Length: 203
Image 1 (cartoon, rainbow, N blue to C red):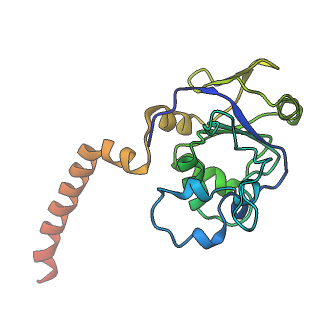
Image 2: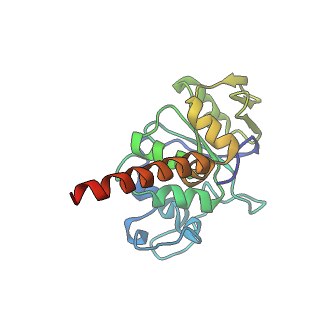
């Protein structure tokens, strides 16, 4: 997982409420076992017509051809099914942070485990950012601030454990590996205990 420190860039604006995981990544792609390439099929209804034509009003279609690393979204982003593929698709698309008044709980957990920073901001702040179509946002995770031309510097709350993991780029595997010495001591103690018990069970 990539460390998250300071992120600067434009934002894709998705003002619709209740954008569910099927909109983020349609269910027909859930058979895919790799994350690579899922960004190309993310948000299909926003980006492509049913016949596959690119939509002119695609909010992800920027003149420079680069996908904005930040999304500003309506309330309850990530609702619907619990598919982790939705977070994989966002990461592969190049999205690193999402600003929203409220996120769906399961999506929030999946996003964190895949290195995505979800920031909940008051509805009036999100509304003003959506209206402005902000092109210049800086997120400082260490300071827990979002800086925009519209609001200046805004403080946001984040769970301390999640903050530490994101700053260090630590997923569940990396966290486990950091405890390698403690795990080895525990396993040795368990083996010694089992060696002491086995002969007594035979008596």
